[in-house]
Image (cartoon, rainbow, N blue to C red; front, side):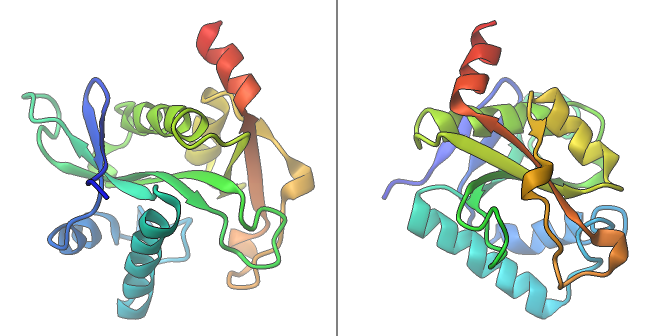
Length: 192
C-alpha cells in the first residue's frame, strides 16, 4: 500500500514514520495538551497509542495522521503540529464502538490558528468521500469547550443518546460526550 498523504491549503496529513514518534510526544505530551485526555502519557500509554494508530492505518486504510504545516514560510512552517484524521471508536461497550470517528490533537503553540478546523474538514471530506462513511462521530468531555466548539463549527450536532461513562477516567473526564454529522449533512454544508 502506498504511503498516504493529503494536502490542504496550509497542511499535509500523512502516514507516520518511525522518526515522528519521539517528536510527537515531545510536542503533545504536555499538561496543557493532555489535560482532557487523561493526563501525561507514560511509556505504556505512548506505546499503546502508537500500536493503535499504526493498526488503524493497516486495518482500515486511515488513521489519525501526522498533521504537518507546509514549508511555506508561515506560522510553524514545516513543523509537525500534531495529528488529525479518522479512526474507529475503540471504547468497548460504548454506543460508538466501531463507528467512524474524527479526532485531533495539537501542540499548544499551534492552537488558535485554524489548523485543527482545516485538518478536520479535510478528514471529514476523506471520510465521506474516499472511505464512504455514512456518519462520523467525535468524542470529547464537557469541560473541553475548545474541542466541542470546533465540532459545532464543523457542523456536527450533539448526540446525547450516544454519551457514555468511560470507567478508565474519573468524574472530571466523564461522561464522554458525542457530536456527529452524516454524509448528507456534510454534503449540504459543503454545497451550501
